[in-house]
Each structure stands twice: as structure tokens, then as C-alpha cells.
Amino acid sequence: MQEPCNRDWETLKKDRAERLKAAAHLTSNGKFVKYSDAVELLQCVIKPYDIVNIEGDNQKQADFLAECLCRVDPKVVNNLHMVQSVIALPEHTGVFAKGIARKLDFSFSGTQAGAIAELINSGSVELGAIHTYLELYGRCFVDLTPRVALVAGVQADRLGNIYTGFSTEDTPAIVEATKFKQGVVVFQVNEIVDKVPRVDIPADWVDFIIKSPRPFYIEPLFTRDPALITDAQVLKGMMALKGIYAEYLVQSLNHGIGFDTAAIELLLPTYGEELGLKGKICTHFVLNPHPTLIPAIESGWVRSIHCFGGELGMEEYVTARSDIFFNGPDGTLRSNRAFSQVAGHYATDMFIGGTLQIDRWGNSSTATTTRISGFGGAPNMGCNANGRRHSSAAWLKCGTETTGKDNAIGGLTRGKKLVVQIAETFREKLAPGFVEELDAVQLAKNAGLSLEPVMIYGDDLTHIVTEEGIAYLHKCCDMEERMAAVRGIAGYTELGLSADPAETRRLRELDIIRTREDLGISITNANRSMLAAKNMRDLVKWSHGLYHPPMRYRTW
Image 1 (cartoon, rainbow, N blue to C red):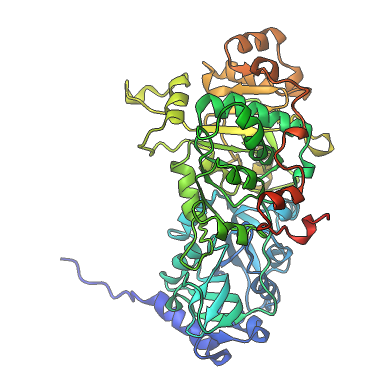
Image 2: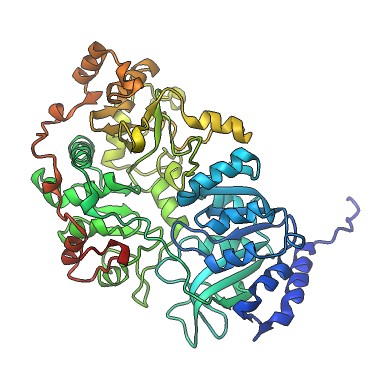
């Protein structure tokens, strides 16, 4: 036997104890800290080179703690490695500009996409990687475990139990990874109460609680005003419903963010009814409580929705529709981004969402040279999980149609998830949606990345929908045919203009490309009159007054 080593096996525990002791003078009742002492608290519990997570979810933000981190003394706290799912606030980029943080691993940036691109291109941020959500959560339990987590809750009780409420989102994953590796967990909460409605995070997982001077910020990220949906988006929605949803009888699915998928949701009670699809498609969703789904829910299309997070204004509606949503005994939604990502990865038959660029091979990305939006959960839901071991009609049909399948498993059956990108041939400012080469290639060179930040790889993609038609990429027999299919629906972009009309006709004959004419969709019917709700007020009426849109969306 080897001699036992003299290693100290409790260095992390001792380090945590030192941090707690350094901050003990700021607390009352063991955990509670005044918001005026928040900056000093962070300087006590965070050390240079720490891995730190600020809860920046898709919607819920630990904004007060982010503000406070921006105010720490860079001589005391510096060179931090920030690990967070979403970069959403100016403070999230401010810590890099001030020298408080130096390295970043993240998933999605949204409104800070331009700022992140500037910081990376200037060398102010050392980029670890742009992750999928599940990938980042997984690494929090492996090699990116936070030493300190700065998170947000709705309420804390006097014992320190936390109620995260309608938008739980990332909180359980962040807290568990930190706490059970002897890290420090700091919560900002809106209220301190005698008793919370339910315990989402138990008190012994929480080290410090600060009653914030204002409620945490939450972004209505998935709210789309039906008044802004265009006729072109209605046309794409109708083509998707008839050429994909009806073709494969897709029942379990995820809709990404955007007006294209909002249009599809509002077409279910109208065009979907015309096609006789109620009960046959769109019965089980994994998505946030989209307001544009209200008409489909109210007209009996939807059976179940599991949510990544909440949506402002939908609280009362969701509580009143407990047969549809996953609500707790307190009556409110319990969302969970990690569980929804797992469900989207393994338990749904289709992902459909938008992108900024698609290249000639069908690879797509939301990372360009001037905007690094990241991916969020799209790559998890927009890929085929080879670990899947249950079948469904849509999954099996798509697998049967797929050509060039991997022969490594012999003659065994394997289905295929439908992965759909719905795109405009030209985006804002006439930026082409189809390109020879993704900006992600140059971005990787600029940032020194070993991988180009591709959102969905072409070999996972099964369909592309544009105003020109649908490309059924999984039916293509080789790469040349796939590239011809992409060109055939790329419109008047440079890539689309390189299409051979004869080749496009051949692909139409093979049902690899279908236009609206091939699908029997009349252009005179493809307009906003087909939408079940044409404005926000219509959504409120459909909800029987239970939906309360945020003020920015109220035009009446």
C-alpha cells in the first residue's frame, strides 16, 4: 500500500469559512445584509481570479448585485472569470471595461450583443466559449464551478428560505453547483416576509440575503405584438404548418423567439382549423408562456406547456390554466430552464426558430462580426440527440426519409428530430440572411477561438423555410444536392442568384423543395387577416382579461 498523503482535503471548506467570517460584521440574524453594505459584502466574499456567476437569465436579472459588482474596487476584486447564461445588462459588460473581470463564458447576449462583439474584438474580454445552456450548466458541475453566485429571488422568509416565483429559470442549477462545492451564495430579494408561498431554495443553501432597493428586472423577452406581424411572416407560417407540421403530425415541440413563430401560434385556431389539424399537432410545448399562444390554448389545441421561465403579464393567466402549465401548490408557475432544456433536447419532435445567417451548406449562426448574440438553448433543441430511445410518428417518419444515414449501426431503426430554421432572405438594413460563409468564421479568428460559433450545424438541420419556399434538406442524397436546395430558397441574395433554375425545378419534382404554389397556398389568403389575434388587445380578450401586457405594449 502507498503511504497516505498529507494533503488537506478541506481547503474549499476552509476558504468558504474565511469568506463568511470576513463578511460576518455586515450581517444581522446570520444572513441578512443591508443593501447599503452590498458592495462591501462582495469585496469580502469575492477574491481575485474567482469564477463568479451573476444570475443573468433570459429574463430574470440579479441587477442590483450586478450593479454592486461594477462598483467594487478593482484593486481588491479583479481578474474575475464570469460564467453566466445571459449577458443582458450594461453592468454585465461594465465589469470588463473596469478591469474587474477578464474572462467570459456565456450562452446568450441579446441586447448586449454589439457591446460584447466590441469587447472581444478589442481584446478587452478573453472569451472562453459561447455555450449552449445545457453545456454551460453541465460545466458548472465540472470545471466552471462558481466560487460565488449572485442570484435573485422574489421573497425570503426570516429563516432564509427563498421563493423564486414565476421565473425560477436558472436559479436551482446555479445555486446547487455553487453551494455543494463549498461556494458562497448571495441572494437579492424583492421582499422579506414571515412565510414564503413555497420554498424553492432552502435556507441552508443560502449564505447572504439582501433586500434590494427595487424589484429585480425581468424582460418580457417572448412577448410579440401581433400588430407587428407581417404578411410575409404569415405566408411563412402557413407554409410551415402545411408543409411540415401537417406533413409530420408534430405534437411535441419548441418554438424559438420571434415573429415567425408567433405567426404560427396565431394561425393554429384559423388556418390550422382549416387544415383539420386540431388534436393532431402542437399538443405539447416546451417554451415560455408566449402570449401569442393564448388563442390556441383557449381554443383547445394545447394540452401541456413546460416553461423555461415566466413572461411578464402572464402570471394570472398561467395560474388560471393549471391543467396546461406546471404550477405549484401555491398556484404559481414553477419554471426551470435546465429541465426545459433537457425536455427540448430529448422529449420533443421538433425545434423551429430563427437565425441571422445561413451558409451554403446549411450551417446557421446568430454570431456575426458586429453582433455576438450567442445561442441560448437553440443548439440543444436544434440537434438530434443520439441518446434518444423512445419513438414517435414524427420522429420515425423524418428518420425514414433521411438519406445518407450513418451505416455504423447496420440495419437498425433510428428516427430523426425535425430541426427547422425559419428565415428571411434579407434581414434589417438589407443584410442577407444567406451567405457563402458565416461571419462566425472570421469571428473565431478575431477572438482566437478553436471552434467557429455555429448555432445549428447543417447536418442537424432538416428544413429551412423562407418566403420562397421550404427546403427539405434531410431528403438530399449528398452535399451538392443539399447546397442546391439551400440556394433554391435563398431568394435574391447573392447565394440565391447562383441557383440553377433547372436544378431547382428538379428538386421541386423530388419534393426536396416546395414553394407556396406546390403547397397549394394562395397568396391572396396569406395575410394578416388569417391571424387569430391582430393586436395586443385581442390577446387580452382571448384571455378573458387574465393577460396583463407590460405597459410598453399597451396601445389603448
